Image (cartoon, rainbow, N blue to C red; front, top):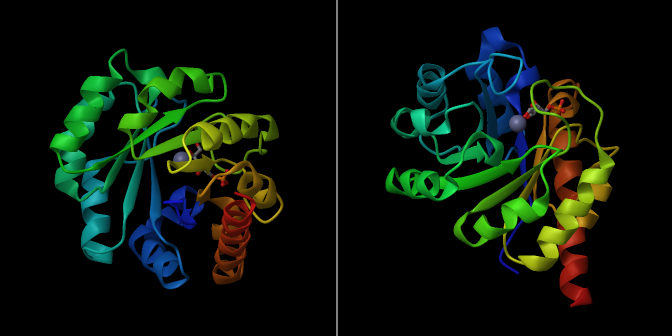
Length: 228
Ligand code: DX5
Ligand code: ZN
């Protein structure tokens, strides 16, 4: 089994005037990576930040922390080069935003980034499946993308279970409404990369929340190993 448990706080719900500090704080609290939500106001009804901000964050945290760019944008092809130059490590684009995922995957790799492919709640996992062998990570959205703090959509976990069965070593990420109350179900379904925004950022003790989320996922992975 090639995958491991990783927790990636989403900084969307942090104090945005302090983003550099907040990113460093999350790393110090045990985050395995940072999940950076880019929204363009077209693909989703909200705007966040772009590559100039990512470059500043990279300078603030240094070379090591892994940046998973969740690109909620209508033209994912437009930002591949700028994001790579800004210091992004993984470029996660939405299947719904392109007619040619194959070209995007190639261009992301040509720019030395890992490839993530995301699906919204209304998109079936069968639509993602043809690309699963070519990507590093599948992101199953567990809310409609656009805002932090929404209610977790449990019925999305059938997609996670299906992907885990079909692609045993693929990194599978869940994003939206994930926290101590919902992590058990995500872990049982087979998710190993866990995005958590408000549950981590809104806590007085983010270190403990991150540790709890990670323990639950590690246990589920171990159990899966033993059951095989
Ligand atoms: C939503 C974003 C998420 C969001 C998660 O569109 O993709 O990353 O910040 O926040 P929570 O964990 O609060 O749902
Ligand atoms: Zn996200």
